Amino acid sequence: MKILIVGLGSIGLKHVSILKEIKPKIIIYAYRSTKKATETKGIINLFSFDELRKHDFYFILISTPSALHKRHILKLSELQVPMMIEKPL
Image 1: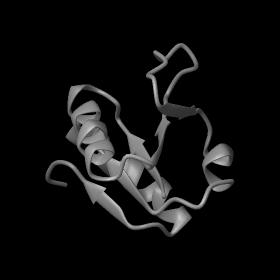
Image 2 (image 1 turned 45 degrees about the vertical axis):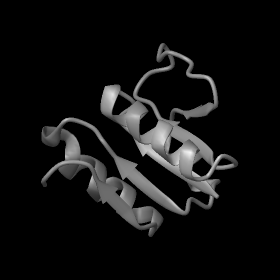
Image 3 (image 1 turned 60 degrees about the vertical axis):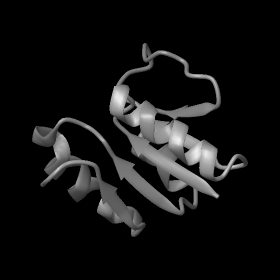
Protein backbone atom coordinates (compact mmCIF):
# COMPACT_ATOMS: atom_id res chain seq x y z
CA MET A 1 0.00 0.00 0.00
CA LYS A 2 1.39 3.38 -1.04
CA ILE A 3 0.53 6.55 0.87
CA LEU A 4 1.46 10.10 -0.12
CA ILE A 5 2.01 12.70 2.58
CA VAL A 6 2.06 16.40 1.74
CA GLY A 7 3.59 18.33 4.62
CA LEU A 8 6.23 16.41 6.51
CA GLY A 9 6.50 18.60 9.60
CA SER A 10 6.02 17.39 13.14
CA ILE A 11 2.36 16.46 12.61
CA GLY A 12 3.11 14.74 9.29
CA LEU A 13 5.84 12.70 10.98
CA LYS A 14 3.43 11.77 13.77
CA HIS A 15 1.03 10.42 11.14
CA VAL A 16 3.91 8.47 9.56
CA SER A 17 4.69 6.87 12.91
CA ILE A 18 1.05 5.86 13.46
CA LEU A 19 0.66 4.50 9.92
CA LYS A 20 3.82 2.39 10.25
CA GLU A 21 2.63 1.04 13.59
CA ILE A 22 -0.71 0.00 12.11
CA LYS A 23 0.69 -1.34 8.85
CA PRO A 24 4.48 -1.93 9.06
CA LYS A 25 4.89 -2.76 5.36
CA ILE A 26 3.29 0.48 4.18
CA ILE A 27 5.25 2.47 1.61
CA ILE A 28 5.24 6.18 2.39
CA TYR A 29 6.06 8.93 -0.06
CA ALA A 30 6.40 12.63 0.70
CA TYR A 31 5.65 15.35 -1.84
CA ARG A 32 8.40 17.85 -1.09
CA SER A 33 8.62 21.48 -2.18
CA THR A 34 12.41 21.55 -2.59
CA LYS A 35 15.19 19.10 -3.33
CA LYS A 36 16.98 20.53 -0.29
CA ALA A 37 14.37 18.82 1.90
CA THR A 38 15.69 16.58 4.64
CA GLU A 39 15.85 12.86 3.95
CA THR A 40 13.72 10.88 6.38
CA LYS A 41 14.41 7.19 6.85
CA GLY A 42 11.67 5.03 5.39
CA ILE A 43 10.10 7.84 3.35
CA ILE A 44 10.59 8.31 -0.38
CA ASN A 45 10.75 11.95 -1.46
CA LEU A 46 9.02 13.09 -4.64
CA PHE A 47 9.54 16.58 -5.99
CA SER A 48 7.26 17.05 -9.00
CA PHE A 49 3.67 16.42 -9.94
CA ASP A 50 4.88 14.29 -12.86
CA GLU A 51 6.60 11.97 -10.36
CA LEU A 52 3.33 11.67 -8.42
CA ARG A 53 1.45 10.58 -11.53
CA LYS A 54 3.70 7.51 -11.83
CA HIS A 55 2.35 6.02 -8.60
CA ASP A 56 -0.92 4.45 -7.59
CA PHE A 57 -1.51 5.88 -4.10
CA TYR A 58 -4.08 4.36 -1.77
CA PHE A 59 -4.71 7.76 -0.23
CA ILE A 60 -3.12 11.18 0.22
CA LEU A 61 -2.65 12.79 3.62
CA ILE A 62 -2.39 16.58 3.59
CA SER A 63 -0.77 17.97 6.73
CA THR A 64 0.48 21.33 5.52
CA PRO A 65 -0.44 24.68 7.06
CA SER A 66 -4.13 25.44 6.50
CA ALA A 67 -3.37 28.35 4.16
CA LEU A 68 -1.86 25.88 1.66
CA HIS A 69 -4.68 23.33 1.72
CA LYS A 70 -6.76 24.76 -1.12
CA ARG A 71 -3.80 24.84 -3.51
CA HIS A 72 -2.80 21.27 -2.66
CA ILE A 73 -6.35 19.92 -2.79
CA LEU A 74 -7.04 21.46 -6.19
CA LYS A 75 -3.83 20.16 -7.74
CA LEU A 76 -3.83 16.71 -6.12
CA SER A 77 -7.49 16.10 -6.94
CA GLU A 78 -6.27 15.55 -10.52
CA LEU A 79 -4.84 12.23 -9.31
CA GLN A 80 -8.34 11.05 -8.32
CA VAL A 81 -7.13 9.54 -5.06
CA PRO A 82 -8.97 9.83 -1.72
CA MET A 83 -7.55 12.57 0.53
CA MET A 84 -7.50 13.10 4.25
CA ILE A 85 -7.01 16.73 5.27
CA GLU A 86 -5.30 17.01 8.64
CA LYS A 87 -6.86 20.36 9.60
CA PRO A 88 -10.06 22.18 8.70
CA LEU A 89 -10.32 23.51 5.18
